[in-house]
Image (cartoon, rainbow, N blue to C red):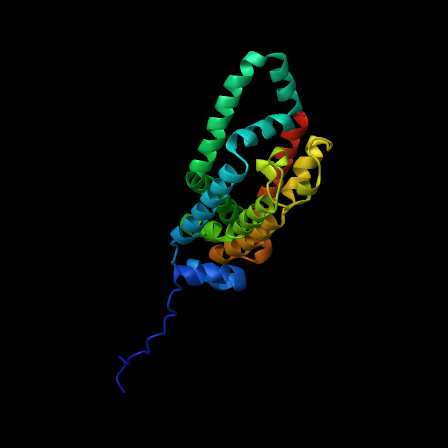
Length: 252
């Protein structure tokens, strides 16, 4: 027999479609992240989904609550700001205009803000999993994993829309905590310590779901143990929660 014996060609597993990756994120996340690790890093489908749901929420808030009311509610929830505006009524109109513009701008630019957050966050997570845990993840793999891991956030939008249509009083609507997905949603922000409210709001089931998925995805694309993925992801989240609680306590 010739030394140049023909070796059998290994079968290649076909890549998943973007819709398959989206559905598997909820039913079999390991398949989605394994597909990303193989080099299928397209992320535009979850980005489109985020954008669509974000604009649906915006439309519902505008039609059922009103952006002016949203801004007034936020001022009312900030006791110091409201007291200052009551003492200086000449500033109130300008503050309302600026706050209204910022609030609408955040909604309209929502998709770009999502991209910016994921792009910057992926740098930190990529560095952490590779340099501290010996991973071999690519930046693109971390970025794509984060985009898919964020999909549970659409359920918060759905619940928020349901709550609004169920008859939420416009005067009690809180745009920063619009859905009953966390402990803070069941507390009165005016009667609760600001630091405690910030911590309670951070304990959100859609956020925890995303953290679990991102931990699995990070570990998969980096080729490390899942415990390393959990430590890296949850560690960064805990750091930002602590910073948020500290800021809330400082300005309350």
